[in-house]
Image 1: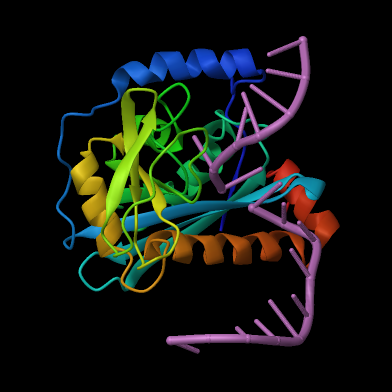
Image 2: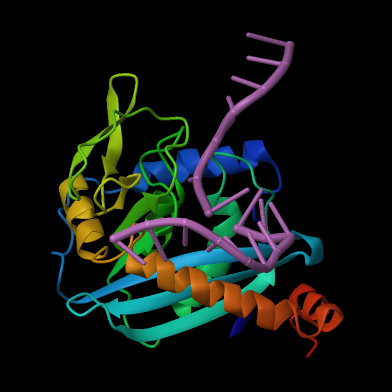
Length: 245
DNA sequence: GCGACAG
DNA sequence: ATCTTGTCGC
């Protein structure tokens, strides 16, 4: 488990964060299909928080896309770098997620984020942001529709409907289990919407959420408890000042 | 102006 | 996100 510092110059205000989004948004690539599902690596990333102790833990879990077996995993902990502000989630998650990705012993392949990409008030969600910073193909699979609207897809798994903001299609509501609430898929970087949905279906043979996010979710919670639960004071101080042991 | 709002 | 036990059902 690696320990992360908040990067120098990290946005301190909402306005600064929005300015960063405006700048990075120009670099999103939307005209590539992305890697085909079922081959190579697919990596899930997720983050857990202890606001009380100002500690955040991130996990990256690499799956073999064909078997969905985990082939590698890594975690990172640090201090919380930004408050939760709808639309600015990336600034809260990204430093620690980047550290976890860096600690992986192999290439991540496609990265699946717990949240949105294009489906974002400013069209630059967590998946878009992470994609631009790493250059990796990314998609966002969220549990809620945020501020967007959609018609309920048909009952069978695989059915989908457009996720919209007015006339603009920003993603899809995709049913991954028969008659169960859909997930909300949007493109991040270097992946088409069709392909993002195909990957999402390939990653949901048994549960509503992709295996990638399920695995990353449980791993980052475990990492948070290890960093926090055992020795609260030491964990908080260590996270605050990585130069101490 | 007020409330809602990914995680 | 997080606070949280058992419980109903396939």
